Image (cartoon, rainbow, N blue to C red; front, side):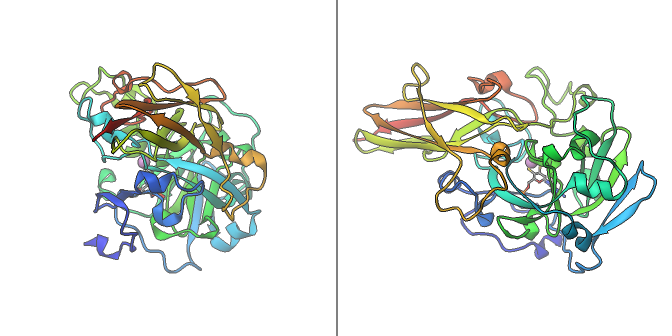
Length: 385
Ligand code: MTE
Ligand code: MO
């Protein structure tokens, strides 16, 4: 099959689907480093990984509602100022398996690791679009503006064999502060095939589905992309909607992700041989550049809470952000120690700088497509003697 040409992957990844390849690291591996190593970064593909070997002729064709359509070659993109942006990429389906337990949902089953934090490097999309005559924008137009569509070179069955595509508002694309990148490096190395070699889009603070990999072309369009993944997928429905009464046109495509956190140092159920200290370590992140204000932890199922310590720098990381502000797109790792004396439930919930808090129960946010499970993360401790 076309999948024979897929690249090799780390044997410790937990594979949720082989063809297309969808895999995540074990949760303990995920929370052991601030910067997620490339081989442990989740991989979410919708088709075979395309091969780009003629890198000199590879170009991104920019057209649509502009006067002078133009192809940008890698050398043109590399000539633009290079930015390092530390950003967390999260699949909208992260933590879907736990949502399925309430009531079945459709989609790839993910634990808590369809998320990763990397240093992406490349040109700003705003700079690239300026090359084709589109001015920069310093404000955000809430609606009514044009859109920028990203089209891939991969082929997926949801598009009837056509390429994966998505769009973002033109104002976000042309606002340098939004840090939207045409990225050719990840953690200081050339982008790997699984993650979009030779060039991908990174839209910080937005669900992973909009960060199109293996970029082929960019279209400036009047209304948002009409592709499957914008119109018939990755939309958040109320709990009353099921596959019999779903009307996709009633909802907007999901863009920013909400406040999220999860504990990675513990399994769903943990058996201690005797009462003692437990390390509670995890990640917390919010979309739209809203930083994390605090992470609350409970060791009595949510009756009482204390605050976890949090950090955004691993002392061992060799990667340095361009400025302190750039980590607003990145997760924080949190940590707490607790003395556990009996069978209990440990819970974590995060609060972002806008005061948004995670919902208590997954039932309240259950949706038929199984996206955005951001409910309080709960793990159980049992003492077995
Ligand atoms: N881009 C293309 N061309 N094809 C894809 O299948 N998957 C999207 C997005 N971009 C996808 C894509 C989804 S749903 C996610 S969550 C991220 O890529 C995953 O990126 P990663 O595999 O680098 O972690
Ligand atoms: Mo995704």
